[in-house]
Length: 423
Image (cartoon, rainbow, N blue to C red; front, side, top):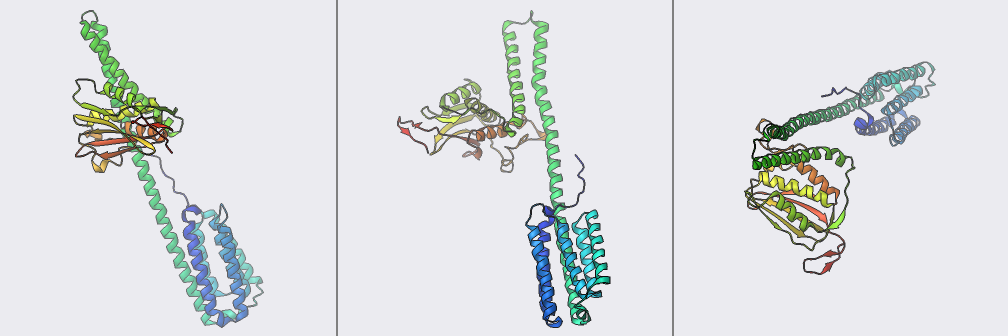
């Protein structure tokens, strides 16, 4: 697993919370100005209110621009405090109350280098205000009431800023923990995939090599029936190996959208009968029935539909009971093909993950089923690429039912011989 490097939060991470606390802070500042307005006189009241409105308006304008930065918002706060200091001269209460607030905002929300730039800007502006301020409102700082309200205001603003920043950082940590857990699960899935693929590839390869070696060593001594039997096993295992490799290689093509899907109108009935007869030949332990009649035309890729049916029927043969039914049902816009068995079905807690890559109901050391858990997700992606979908539901009274849909072709031939125009 790769190490995740701690990084400062971006604006998109804590920007919304920062915008909310600035809106609250500006509102509280407006309330404080209104409260002390009666004490400082209307001229000072108007000047303070104009300063607040200008700073708030500038912040709102910059907030809506793409690529916004929290540094600009903090710089606006510093500038607003600096303007007030220029109007009042050296105001100890404001200086002592606003400085911690601005420092906390800078170092909580910004990278250290940008925070230091803000501190440098703040020190420069405050120094200018101390030595060169015109101070037309210097009498304001003599009011005890104004000083108390100012000190309380910035204490409240500081608490709000710390609480909001802390909440946002905890949220980011939560996201990081989820990402780490997702990465851990992905690595676990990869390990399981390698283990399953190793097992699944080794089994047919071992059979092929073993029977080929037997044929090579005892060709002259074996009976003809035994030779045909061994060759049949080699051929069967080679086909199984080919199907496995094809399933593995098809995933990146599907996910990249480079899978070749040749959609064309065709009747699914003959294809379905043929696949079922191949996978459940006469004399099989499982009785397979097909309840699909001809006369319906769907849109899809017959080669991919065959692959989907093979996957679903293979699961029914492996996990189902002794009966399998393949039926078709025509709806208004789609044609539904269902593969139903009377086996044990899929437990409810596993139904949500059976369409995930490399997922199987039995896993780890308890896994007794063959396969690498690719059949169902591949089948679903193939069906979706043809405009349909693949779903699972419990069969009645027990068993599994996998149903996939295909679009009906325009001018669908109905079973009663009439023609129905699909929408």
